Image (cartoon, rainbow, N blue to C red; front, side):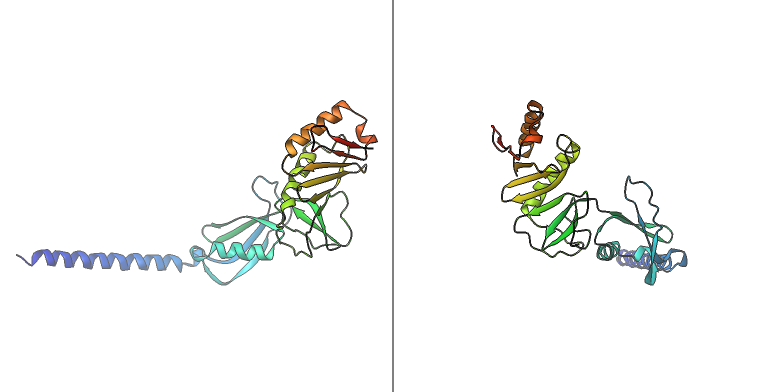
Length: 246
């Protein structure tokens, strides 16, 4: 009678081992099932909320083919970012039983950076999205950032303190459709100051950390003096009493 608990324990342990082996066998059977085997990656263009793209999906073979459950999504994402450095990866997902789908979207180009005698298209997150060219792209604002060295490679992310301030100022001007009807030509970033140059040649100077207040000051100044932009050579709105150069 004293040996019965040990016997019961042995039976339970044996049952657990049998169940574990059976479960392992089921997992192996699922992983090796032909219906779950994926042999290609589908890459489509669009992104969340974007209109369907007319660009056909690209397909890449997976070598060797493998179970969809064994695909390393992080590794796939890293490979796609290296292959498409100018694009933003939206997602990589498994679609049962045997489809692996990735969605990319082009980065939104907001300006062109001039450095080392070339012009580089850049996105709003500071990613270089095109090889530098010797002449500027038309109708795309130019960023001139102090002490920024080139050349740059596609996919490289800018690390410059003036870039984010320039993007903020650019966004303000874009929301207003320009400045009193004038388009933006360039933004120069120097230390803590930003200078926006309009298509009329007028320069407007802002501080990098007070742009909201200074933009409001500019709007009030334009409202008070409607012909100001046609007469001035530069405006410095960093002061409560803006400096007007004629």
